[in-house]
Each structure stands twice: as structure tokens, then as C-alpha cells.
Image 1 (tube, helix red, strand yellow):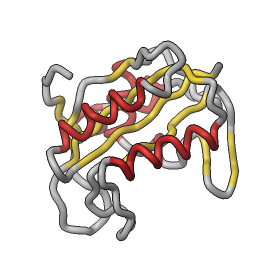
Image 2 (cartoon, helix red, strand yellow):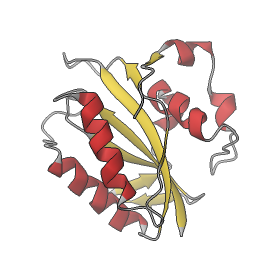
Image 3 (cartoon, helix red, strand yellow):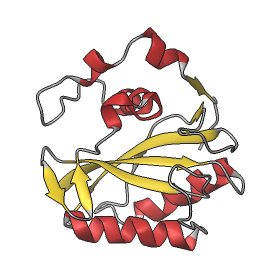
Image 4 (spheres, one colour):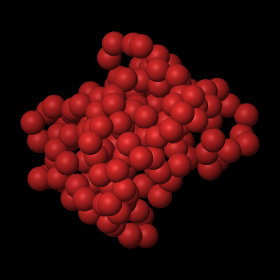
Length: 162
């Protein structure tokens, strides 16, 4: 059984509702149906595509799914919630990314874990710290060492119950 961390993001079609629905769907992948979810944060979109701000969070749970089966399940959830892959870093109803799969380092054509951009993305680091403040990444870097004042300034906690 693996402990996984999943990044959630949405900026179309009621983003908060999209994340709430995703958390329910993720609970079906968890061995004990329990999912730990960070607070929701608002963040500016990446890239130069004009689009609304994102709502982001990080979820964690234990699963017996192997990494590719988990990726397939996450992509199925995205599709069920209306995800269309048209533009890189474009607007989306839901984005689910595997950040960590235990302490494994995975380099496959379809999947890289730890997620390739997680160390540079405040909208991942801040909510991840909310649910795993003592986390050390597979490379040996502590999560807390990656978070500074600039990182904290780039995201705004929404203060919503979910």
C-alpha cells in the first residue's frame, strides 16, 4: 500500500465544486476511503494563456493502485468532470497530478514522480505543507526548506469548509 499526494486544480465550471467532487472521487481510490485534504488556495495561472485564477489543493491517501493504474484513475476522474486537453497550461475544469508516490522516483513515458514542477510551484508547496509539514522529498530535500515568504505571497487561502 502506497501513500500518495495528489495536486488538485481547477479554474472553470465552479472550481470549488470541481475540487469538492474530485475529493469524493479520490476517496473511492483510497483503501480506507479516507482522504486528507489541504485548505483550498487561490493562485494566478501559469503561462501566458488568458484565463481565470485557479483554486488549488493537495490531497493525500493510501492506495494499492500501482502508479500507472493511479494515473489512469485520475485521468478518468478528470474526464468525468469535463476535462479537455487542448492548450498546455490552459484553463481546465479539473487537473489532478501525482506529486508523490511513497518515496519512489518514477521516470516513465507517461509519468514522472516526484512531479517535475512541484519544487517551483507555490500552489503545490503551500497546501502540501498544510497536510505534511514534516515531509522530506525522495531527493532528501525537506518540504519546509522550499517554502519562503515569496512562496506564501503567491497563494491566498480561501478559508472554505470542504
